Image (tube, rainbow, N blue to C red):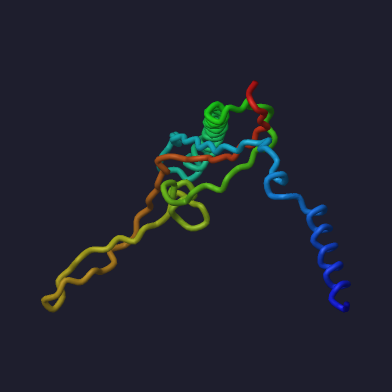
Length: 164
């Protein structure tokens, strides 16, 4: 009967595993939080659109204006999600500033190196040399670019309870 101790050990191992690791259905706890995202946008309006400092101050003011809009949109989205799921929205547990998406809001960080909004741009002109059109340098000019809009995005996590 050399197989009997091996069978006893295997049976004991299965019973022990069943006791220590609950089934998947009982391991899932009901959701107690809800996370919603919000995005706010604001247009910077510099006093002098040809001044680096004025543009920078306008962008900072627009960022400060966009953040409360993002939080308000996130809360409205959370309320709608909770209502759709039949939950009651509780207290705000956490808030995080999501990294901005660089695609539609490219100008927010400045179009020149190191976050500058003003800089020198090379000008070129087309001339005909030896019967061929050639682009040649025609000097530089100072250009300032004001971002069309500034955005802020946040993630809000709320406590939720089942609706009564």
